Image (cartoon, rainbow, N blue to C red; front, side, top):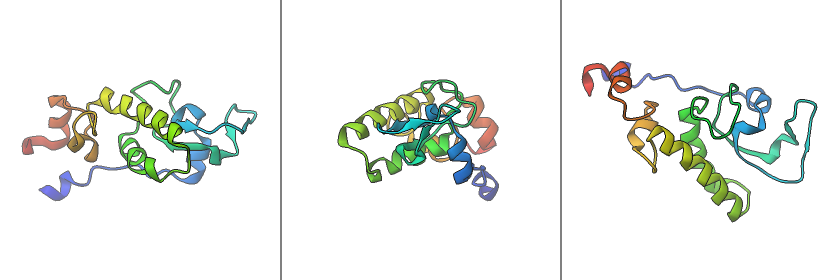
Length: 132
């Protein structure tokens, strides 16, 4: 029974998919680039810590946050080659989303790890069934 619970699908994003994301999908964009015809920063290497899916309109919105990628962005934050000030800015942004979803350090780490997306009992029940 645990095997079926642990098979919650986590999205794998290809390089092409990440490159196609709008700038608002990232926690931090370094200065010095220019915008392409779609309004995306180039070179793409200036964009760091993607955590919104392609439907994102605003960086502060909750609905387009991909929880496994939010968790990954928080885990990779200290490994990025951006300034300490930029890391603080990115961390503040990512923590805002953790609070929105009530997950991670700002909420409950167990929920984001398994992709639950918050403490809503109906949501948990639909994912976990009688195990909660």
